[in-house]
Length: 374
Image 1 (tube, rainbow, N blue to C red):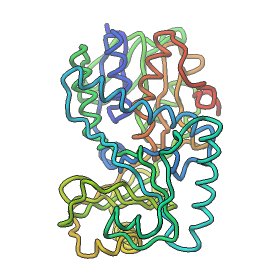
Image 2: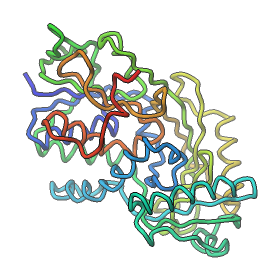
Image 3: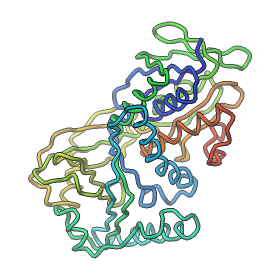
Image 4: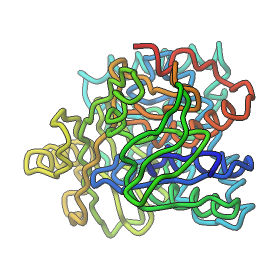
């Protein structure tokens, strides 16, 4: 018998499992390591003020504290002896490359300044407009933009590395991580009693379903609509001789971005494709992404293609995650539907779920994300 079983080991599930174990709950994380998990392919941009999602106030109210939680969590992980998390505050450059993008740029800036005034986030003085030539100085391969904003607290995270850090820290608190698949939930009288896995039964008082794009598989057992669909995002990683470690992230508009990493590596993303559970990289997708690179940063023309990735983002019908208790099934919780922003929202989602299980009032009103809203 264990206190809690977490189903799904991407960044959301690993964050839930870490926070539960940290709080003293006996916790088992069951992960079947599905090919195409969004965590494994995500670019890891952490910047709600400039995100293409920031038009949604409901999303922003969750994303703002989620990204501000990262530095605190990184410090907490280091206190357990986990030093390598893949998190870096590198700054972010949001650019409008042509006249057509200037209108979108100005709308993003308007919302950003309004939220600075009403919410105090982003903090005053952290976002500045740059002259086009100054933007190019920060990222030399960049084409000269029409407009550019620099957000000094923009950050990036390697999803796979952060997931591993959460698990390693969780183990110091007794977290049990098991490879395998959960085939069924077990309930009695409307209350969770555990799960059936490929390795046998696990009795538990609480089950948290964090299966990403595969979460709807449990909808019938929960008696709940879980309208989460897979949306494929392809990303190309290239390698250049330039010293990329000091570059900021570069975002255009419409899911177009460059994420620099140490060692000359740059991730180029991303496609946005409704193709079911096909986690393939394709000729059309790669062609589209390399076109993005040549338009944003023609100075990368000689970069070498090193890696192709595709992840299935779990996108909910209304674009907001499902976080909270399942109505009518005591002990069952959902943590899924984060879409393309799972790396932004995932670690904080873990904290919120742990707060709910402990009977603590979450710092964010979760009504907009309640699983029973559909």
